[in-house]
Length: 108
Image (tube, rainbow, N blue to C red; front, side, top):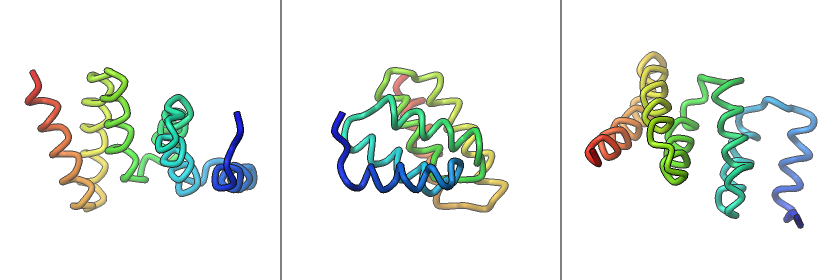
């Protein structure tokens, strides 16, 4: 697979800081944008595992789970993210997660 310059730069940074959530998030976003879903998923899940307080991840990981037809995983991630964003007082992320949870719950 031919990587573009941006992905190469991010992967290079990741070698020096393997659990830096900002770099992992940027990699996940870039992979998702390029349709490299398995890699995007790997990076989002790694953030949740190593940096659970990085609140922006939960919305994007949940949406990716939805795209993959993994509704139960999406619901779980949205709920976990809501707990963390409430504790941190991150009202913007909390609002996004509540909306996502509401939309996916309305599908039933």
